[in-house]
Structure formats: structure tokens, C-alpha cells
Length: 235
Image (tube, rainbow, N blue to C red):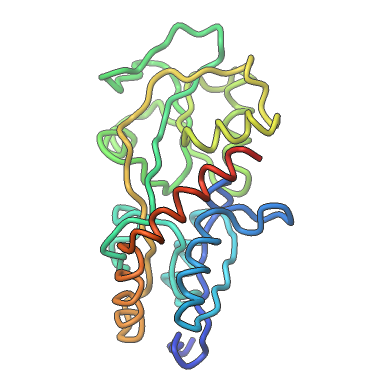
């Protein structure tokens, strides 16, 4: 596929996965708070944002095969060959969840022993969990669509002992009654990690990132993103 100049076409196509409220794909939420935020930033430079949603492993492959321009949200550990914005778009916090009847807790240690942990394939959870996942065998890795719902289903059905997923994602699902708060509980969290916008390494994208970097540090844009998180959490 020929290289595409984002400035010539005035369009940037970014891949992501369903990770609501960060990235959503339904009529009510458009494509989530990150999509809304980046759309605003790009529109000020007369660039149209197109966001496509895929299972995360496929989203990574689409960037590698040059079928999209980059990733709407990513960490350097997930896609080290891409160009990343200097400033993060926002942050996420991965937490461990168990069924309500479980006594498992993971405060300072993430040694799960013989307890089966479920994760999403190719996700970057941050250290020390990423290293733990690579070297331990009591791990169930899933891929495909609706991964958060599937992780929770595995947990409730007793097929795994622990799952790890983002705190805001679970809180959002509980607030919207797509998860029964009485079935699962938080059993500890990792430190917050930043996520970034990532583009394929081209000269055009380097130039575009310079503009995005300037936008991401503007106080009005930072405050706008914070307000988006507040507003969507109330809905």
C-alpha cells in the first residue's frame, strides 16, 4: 500500500479497540472521550479524524501493514516502532478483580501463585505485570472483541480466579448497569500509566506530531479532556 500523506488528504485514520469510555463505538458515545478529544485537536489544523475499531491484536497488525496511520491510544511497550506523542493523552489504571466471595488481595505483590489470571493478548499493562505475564504459566490470554465483558464472564463462571482491566472501564460499566456490582470486586490496583497517540514513522507524521505535541500541552486542551472524563462518567 502506498504511503499516504495526512496533509494532502486532510484525513488521519487511527485504529483502536472498544475500551469505553476511552474509545466507544455506539450512537450515544460516538468514539469515546479520546476520539472526541483528538478530533477537536486535529480539526483546528483542518484534518479530519477517522477512527476504526478492531480487536487489539488486529489493530496493531493494521498499523504494521500500513493500512492505517496509527493508533488512537497506545503505550511504547505495545508498539515500539511507532512515533509517539511527547505528552500523554491521559492515563489509565489497571486493577485486579475477583468474585465477591474471594479473599484474594494484591496490594504490593502480584504473585498470583496457582490462581489463574486472565489477560488480553498484546495489551501493555505496565510493569511489573507485563514481565510477570511473559514468564508465568498460570495465565489465560484472550483476544477478539468485547474483551472486558468476556473477562468478567470468565471470572463469574469460575473459569479464572483473577482478571485485570482498567478501573474506569469497569466503573463505567457498573454505572451503566452492564455489570452487577454485587458479582465482582476490586482486589488491588497497579500504579497509573500514561497512554499516547502513536503514528507510523513517516516524515508527514513527524510534522503532524509536532503540531499535536503543541496542542497536548495547552492548558485549555488539558482541561477539556478532564471535563470530558467527568461528563461521560455522569451519563
